[in-house]
Length: 151
Image (cartoon, rainbow, N blue to C red; front, top):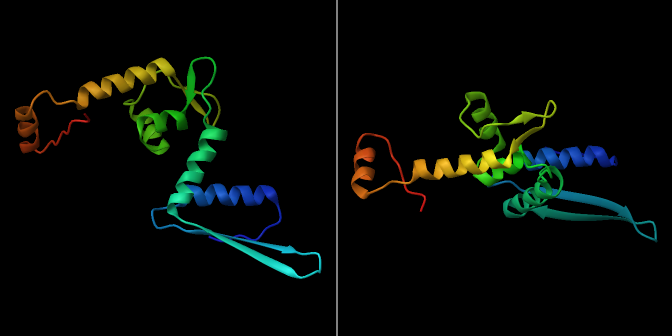
């Protein structure tokens, strides 16, 4: 992926798309050309590795797209982060009816969840994934269903 632009909106869109597509091996190189006082063009270059890209993505999401709503609701990206899953997984759970209840579609691209329902779902999920004793864990793993304690 590459882009050459002077338009701020195009650049912002490019960066958002790059952050959505980054993997553990991704590197993004940013080049910026300026003209100094003597009229000579100067090229500045910076490379961002996978860890920096991940930190940048987290910072951008927490600052701009996922603030908790004041009336007891959270936006879907904030819910996904709280559950430790991707937003696509959360969307799939909505379609299957297996995720937190009570979600509301605000518009074509925005979904919110009641905080109480998210907390209830997390509590229910913790109870379901906690195995009572090692014998039960052994039996379940022998039957092809592997269950590991989250504790």
